[in-house]
Image 1: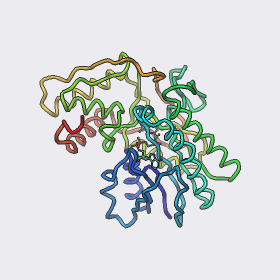
Image 2: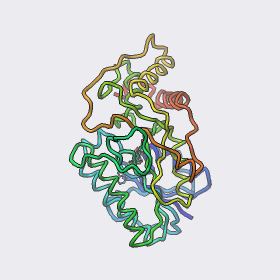
Image 3: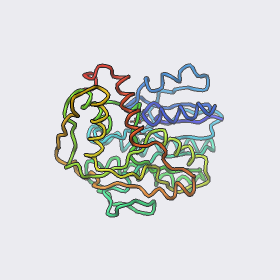
Image 4: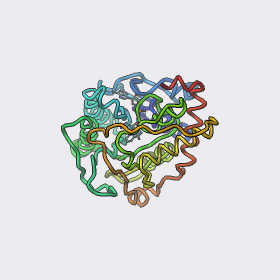
Length: 322
Ligand code: NAD
């Protein structure tokens, strides 16, 4: 049995591939290294159960024998990328997902698609159950990603209807942890990088927007449980510990200050809010508990400490982050 992980050289991809190899599975990563890196998969290279095919999912995918499951993670996920490459992101969401579902049709493989909390847009409700249909701006700087991922879900439904493809949909909420790219623009690596370099951390907006951060290993265990469950409708995978972004920044800067022996945590600099950036985001994870027996386990304190340790070890010279 072979499992394909598209986007396996990315942040979540690394943790998922590790989990699968640790379970003795045979894994083929398909990744163009657009936002991922060879470094993220270097430790798997000597494992005979591991193979990396350098390819872009926007092109038809290479055939894989004995293919049983495909985790489709390939897609940039940072707001900076939404500005840099919106057309390529839309192509990746539509053409990439279609190519994955075509391969699954031929090989009769089950597919797990990485969807996102962003499909809910800027929500009008405080806690997000899977039944909430969202408040998305189709014409704005985030729409390439938000609408792209909504298209991914629609493709899943359509391929199930027309081709009987077995699909699983994970609506992933903010994840963080080791193996995030230092410069990809997402909050936690941004905060750690700035704090390590003694620079003010930048927050878009007044800091009162909320997020719930889940640790990477929790997230990929949720993906694994969903893939191997019988549940075939969308499931939220996230933490329900809601915090203001400024509180998360303060937590990160305190940990970095302690570990580096800085006299005080670095300051926070507030920048104009990004257009359409959601003001609240908290998942209802009741369904994941009921159908998968899954809930996040790693505390924010432990997760932040482990992530900061990893960044310090990887980027010994803080200047290399900037
Ligand atoms: P990431 O950028 O670290 O990883 C994405 C990987 O996909 C990279 O290795 C990149 O090179 C590869 N990739 C991108 N476009 C590709 C293409 N066209 N062809 C081949 N490879 C391509 O991002 P991540 O945080 O690991 O996210 C993984 C998936 O999870 C994404 O689909 C993302 O939308 C989804 N997701 C992530 C989060 C999160 O908080 N990390 C939240 C919601 C959803």
